[in-house]
Image (cartoon, rainbow, N blue to C red; front, side):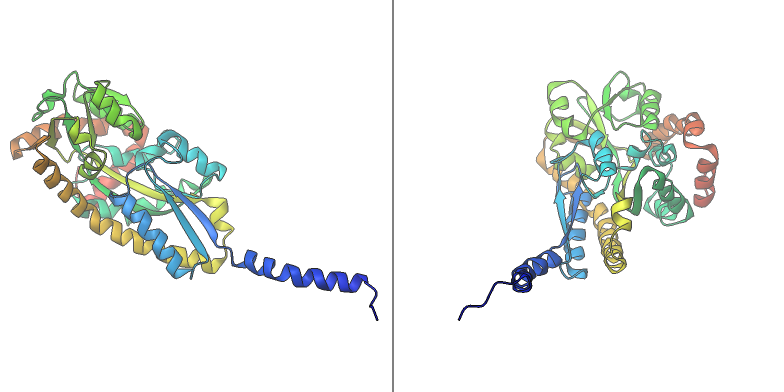
Length: 335
């Protein structure tokens, strides 16, 4: 005897067939695309990979962080727009990137010799000033999660550089930052804004004569292979703000956000611990390569650099904010 096919049996059968699909969809992890412009073997690169690992662990696989290094998805100028549009969910742009976006206060981090050491820097990033700066990103559609160190910068060049006047007339690649432009002009150099991914070829072909960056970035991008000279000036700082698309972040379940906050805290601690080690190892590796001669400044030479570049603070006060600069001075006990 055959049973008539009723609407009820069709719906029941459909429900049975749909159940595995619904279960699979429910188990599909939340994907976070984390894009950045540097190599994996840099402080930021290893920090991003560590965050991806911790996010998977702490969410028990409910979140999958896909890391795209070396400008695989977007170059410097493109990545912030991509985050605003939701094409990626997470970035760790250098702090200099927020000036062109309209949050000029972040360019305080670019001021030469404003942070005498990492301990001084941490007073700002971990304190009230750092929190207020992050809050200024909210109207841009970003949520700031953490500050990550890279380190203090060195100069590289196609000729020996020991004193500030050695930079005169050189075309030097910089990130897009009015403060960094002023810094290079103070040295008599010609600032050239250029995407990080284009620097090696520009140095190799003579489009620019030199650059400034942290040792780990110089080494990982093989800049030392096309720049025979350098100076360990420690004249400025490069750090990053790890940011997410605000709408995406606020749409996550509360328990997922909590787990990701912890993963970010763990990744930040690790990043900031290893950044100095990575830079020290990069300096040693570059010296051992024999391809670049790195000059260590004498105390007298260091004072010449400071004297030449400190006036940039006053010159840029109207852009960065004189009150902010004074607040940093007060927090650090400097002037």
